[in-house]
Image 1 (tube, rainbow, N blue to C red):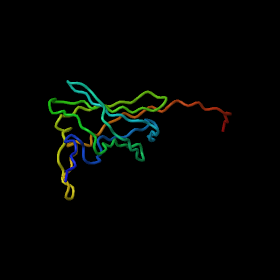
Image 2: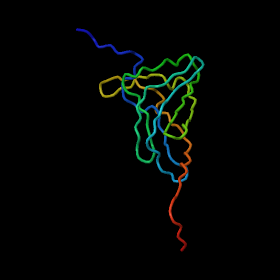
Image 3: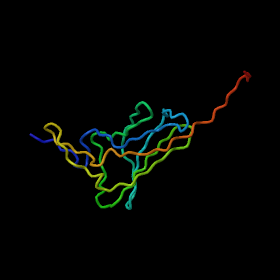
Image 4: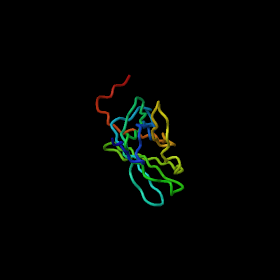
Length: 146
């Protein structure tokens, strides 16, 4: 009988990795129809995490690390910069950064029922996204004086 072996750097559970809120400054309305990417950089290089975007009511969102995502080894670096980029057509991208200790990106074992799962120790990371200025609009029609 053989045992199934998983990569020891693979996340073994679905978990929220990053979260925040994306909304308009004046109306406080949620922005819909955007794409999110989460990247990292440190003294040794940079890369992009493999995540899936979940959008919730009110402009709240979460980036999910899917099971079997391979986590880079950050243990040799003190600090890692996480950069969240939100893009929507045709506007410019909105970005936010946070600096975290590499220990917060380490995989830790967590017991769940009778299973022992690996998860990212410091997740979820919360990003403070500045509100976006609404797109200018043109009003067209007759002007009525009251």
